[in-house]
Image (cartoon, rainbow, N blue to C red; front, side, top):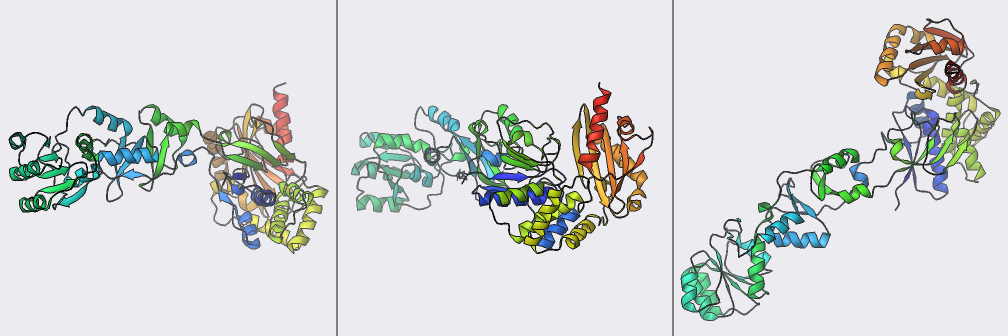
Length: 545
């Protein structure tokens, strides 16, 4: 299945941002698209009330869209044990088409990494049969490297202590070269086999899958000699036996690994300073796959549809790393750039949900009660039950139709939604200031505008001193030229405006107040997008004329 397309609203999501994402995801799914409704932040109290009342789960939280290891890695958890032989390592690399493999012990702990380069270096060191004693090889490893069958002998886990020799000469010569503890490669020469056993060797490797006589087996059992029969000829056995060395002898113990949530930008820096072809990826300490340099070259961008916003400063973190394919919005155009043409539905209405609902009807998609309830709640919230100057006849008409489909009383449910939005509970001043905040680029200025709609503004204004301190701090931390805080009185239909920042002189020019007044009352002002941003933009433009 293809990767999903995320339908997501702005940071510090409001009810419209959440409900329109869910509603538009419903439409796209009905049209056959693979989409997921998402959100770019914590759900506020009003939206929580709406979702719980209607019985819908919150959308998936996406904190950012920066590409991560999990987006490009191969989910291949092939590993190898430190006791595995080099031959088993080579076979595993070939079968799984890997350039390196993680070494995992009995406790499922990553203890090393071994690469094709490590294996090749070991191979080129083989000018003769290796002293297996130096490689900490056991007889079980010898048997596995030779694809051998144990004819007789016990305790194959014990370490090889002697050298590997070929018993292809006369008996006299064999008796001279063989020493106790050695491994002897022999054919089906009865006399040579018996001579080796008589000399006290540790193991006979009978090559070419030849038969071993019972007399030889009996003698070997009495002397404690292991007999292993291999299907390969003597030359091949002589080459393969060097591959009985355990992986732990050549693995890299200095491990560089990544977690699935690591940013690709960080991974790229690490890869640039190291020479490995692939790196293990861990999740809670367990191997889940690998990431290679090729993965970084083949990364694909997440596809997203933006609802209820179109400015980069308001979009989810990392939006520049994603591919925007659609925008559904009702705000001013904010300068987002795309690499290719996209679908945009942009209307001057009071709510994105109004646009979404009408798109559903236009496509003849039946709107179920829960989706209707969500879209209606979004319209109520964004238009403040049609009291906001942003509200249009189309918003009211759409909400009334949705109310019928949802089986809800528009006025009663509307008041319940607005009351839920004014329940501030134990929120701190800092939380109030960030409850519903949007960023704007106005000319040369970076501006943040927070808005809080309440029934009793005095409850908020009582903490004015602390609010102003937090606004000043927000200016410095966020590098804003101006921070505004709208405390909107739903009953009286007006806004108390607090502001802070080095360009606060624009406030006086935009709203005709006396310079130095840090609290303004703006009667009839209820909309951030229609009554605050336009005059502020005009004041900024006039300043640069």
